[in-house]
Length: 508
Image (cartoon, rainbow, N blue to C red; front, side):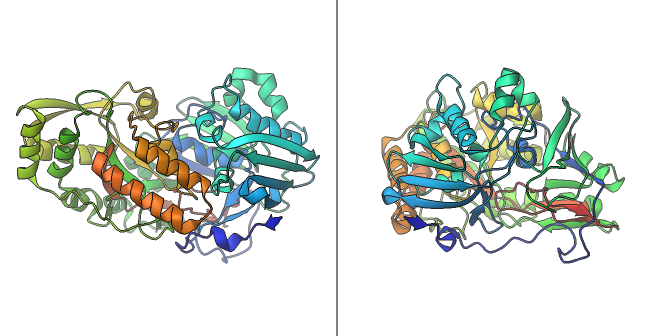
């Protein structure tokens, strides 16, 4: 039996500073309300069915995961206080925390872990995580009241990272069975905050869990997530004190708060991956030369200069530098309008052909899209912009009701967490219809081997193939900032760009 070696899980990107004044400033102070301004696309608070990015910062307050991530993407215990890896990497045995209760008073134990994972694997439940987990997990075995094993079909080094994400969020079996389909609006976990109210399109309110199992860990009385249409309005509300925290800010947004007393800003260590995607399994984007023409028509350096003050990093694939699976950019599609026009002619795309770019009404996307209209127009493609509400945007991407969209993704603690879901033909977030048997085989192989160098080689090869096939056109890794009330202390910033508010407090 091999006890986990946390050093082997380090990704080497360095620690990310916590938000707020220095963590050492003062003693944590009980009380107060934290109000977070966020672009609300929340559709469910059941992690078994959650797919929206904005839901995750709320889920991490209501629920605990089996495993947690650190600001350097290393892994640490949470509901599982220790684990061992057996059977050549095919069996993970978790020892659980004692005395943990769900918010409804029922016990968290090994049976609850088994129920949660079995629920995700159940075809009848139709969890979006099933396609991610079913190929990996053979069964879940209760060994004792606080001991549970996950038996795998083959070794999978990314399992612990999976258990630090939505797949590892533990819901109350009793509450889920009691509420049925309404559980997503009546969530019950073991987390530091208890769900109190959800007014659709307005706010979600959580209150401190007085019986939280981590002693002296939480300080705020409540956290309110207030729906904010865009970052401009979010910053206005921050200025007047209606919210305490807003993030996903582009560099030029900071001018709105420059010189304002009582407001602090902080830059994300790893910015989101911005790109364009389309449905490559049907016209017109099933034409590989059209996709390449669009890639070479875009002047990404100019887009960076105008939308990010030149502070973003141009992306040539989904992985930024500084992660253990990073690789050199061997395939780069440089700005070349003449080549783009030639490719369009070879593709049989006539000058004046119209494409529809569907986009949420968000300031950064609006600026990006205006430049795309200009740059594709220069090579003979007429782009029509079709706005859609932010709250509906990703749901329509998932249902494949819209085509050719700007999109952004954050990194995961293990590369499988992003590569598989987006680029494998069976990935639950594969909304492009992309299917390449060679890519599937490499991603499957990367899931099975524990040899990090071999995994690095496989992900580098997948990245190169993606740049040939172009199911996404990479744009950049954004320069992103959070702005917050200077009194706010202890918000932990993570490289997955999801702020953790569990241990936050407000200084006097």
